[in-house]
Length: 316
Ligand SMILES: [Zn+2]
Image (cartoon, rainbow, N blue to C red):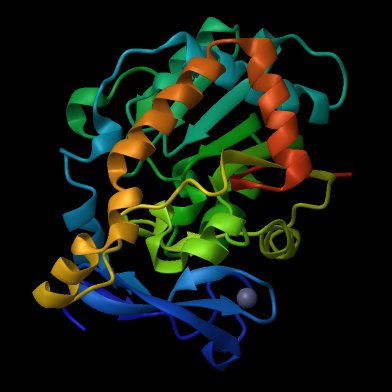
C-alpha cells in the first residue's frame, strides 16, 4: 500500500466487520492491487482500500473532469426534469418549484443547478473541491456540514454516493440540512447489476480510482434509516443495459498480462469505441422524452440497468 491509500476496516455502509465481506475480484486503485468485496450483512459492494486525504487531493485536482464547463444539451435538460418529477411526487403538498429550496451536493460545474433554476427552483450547489474560478452566488466551496440545519426541501446527489469515503457522516449531514418533510434524490452505479456480476473487474464504473462504493437499494436504505431518514423509499434501475458497461480493465499489474488481454479477440470485441457508440445512441434517446421514458421503463422492468435512481423522504 502507498501513502495515498488506507484500508476500510469495516463495511463503510453498515459498519459490519471486514471479515464479513466476501472477496469478489481485484482491481487497481491508485496503482495498487485492491480487492473488491461484498458485505454479507448489507450487500454493499466496495473497494476495500480507500484514498487518504493526499490520495483524494491527487484525484480531485482543478483538472478533474466534472469541473469542466460543458454546454447543457436538451438530453441533460430532459433527464433533470424527469428526476425532479420523481422528487415532486415524493414531496407532500402541491408546492410550486419557486417555493422549493434545492441543494445539489457535489455540484461539479453546476449544470444541474442551472437547469433546476431554469425550471423555477431556488437551486444552489456545493462541492468541497470546487475550483475558485467556478465559485459564484449559487455555487459554493462547502461541505454539507457547513450548511444551516433544516434549510432545504430537496437534496440531490448525482453520481456522488459512489465517491464517499465516509458515507455515514455525509448522509447524516444531509439529513440535518433537510427540512422535516424534505426529500433526497441520488443516482449512483448499481452494485448488484448484471453488468457488475458478469463483467466483474471489467465493469466500466470500477475503472475510475474515485469510484469506491457500489450501492444496492438494501444497503442504501439500511444506512439511511440509521442516520434518521424514516420516510418512503422509491427507486428505479436505470443506466445502460446489459451487456454494455464493459471497459478495458485496470486490474492487470504486469505489462505482459495487459498486452495478452489486449491481444485477445474477446478484448477487441469490447473495445471502447462500442461503448462510445452506445453512449451516443443513449443521448439521442434522451433527447426524445417519450422514447426515453419507454426505454427507462423497459430497463427497470427487466432489471438490466447498471445504475440506481433512488429517492427517500426524511419523515413519514
Ligand atoms: Zn455492510
